[in-house]
Image (spheres, rainbow, N blue to C red):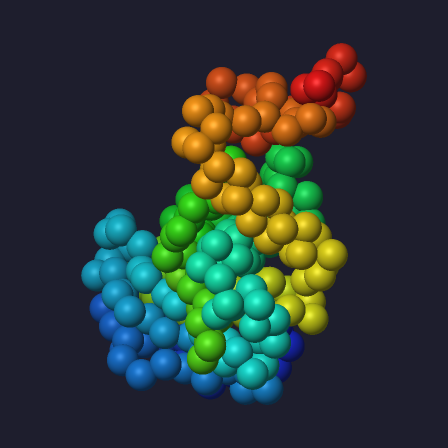
Length: 245
């Protein structure tokens, strides 16, 4: 077999490969101290490992030191609103990458290319809807930025699929490199996202004093994609889309 996704195998990936064919509880050996990923400035933690392939998925964290992540201090520690917006942006990018997207256009439906399967292997993060609120899916502070995901560790029957698990971990590390490092992100899009959230917060603070209950910005897209999809409608969805004025 060739190396797992993400280039040369890390110690974690080698450990997973060595588990190939063992009984499913062998995965419990992953918990405890974090696994440093060689040459990638990140550490993977298995906080809760599922007991079998049919149990709720395992809880996994990937932590990147802030000195390596390089996010601006203004977005991390200077303002709680900016910090919430930053974590929301990173969550959306990582979610899109894990679902097989490019991490840049959250309005488009994504099909195929993800790590999902019918028997384990499903890798997910809590995907935000249209609201930007404080969450724990991504945490950023002066010391580190951290993503928290769930992973259904793969199995064949009740035996470990170690090589496939190593591939999935490699794919997770690839996605983290494209989302939890400032240099990998679209800095202009991130700045616009943070400024938009800060503007909304400032406007909401003024509503009570003006005896208002809400506001709608000119150019806003009010229609949603569907009754079960709260993403904004696009011209691709309907050429008759009319912006609010």
